Image (cartoon, rainbow, N blue to C red; front, side, top):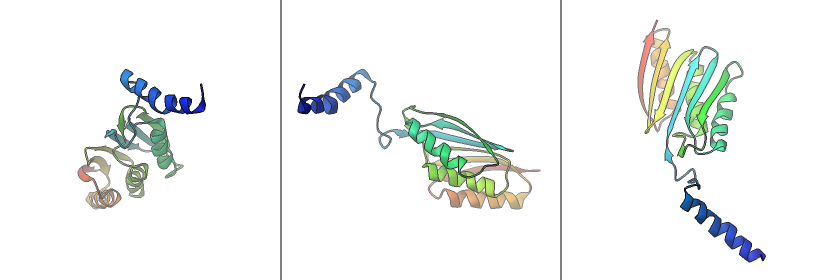
Length: 151
């Protein structure tokens, strides 16, 4: 097989065959946004949700790990799920950074459908207000719904 024929087969025929069999994946920009869940529990950060690829999953994990060496990061994000992360790795790290900067050690956030649903246990109402402001600044494109309790 000559080079032009190989290029034709590689560029057109193989992707068409894979797509007809349902084995081809959509590019990240075409995939629908999925869900990202992050939880802070004392010295652990848990990440869960959907990513369109292993590269996308790893980029958010790396961005979160770059925030802190004091927390263990548990990655439960499903790669190749057909849905991309609903926020960029930078935005995910910014949200978690806002939580960590406020000293909150019991937090759960779910990003889905243009909304951040956040719940946390905070020391007092003043800290709750500071966390609320920090989350809104960290994710200006998201609607923030919160349920904070104080001790």
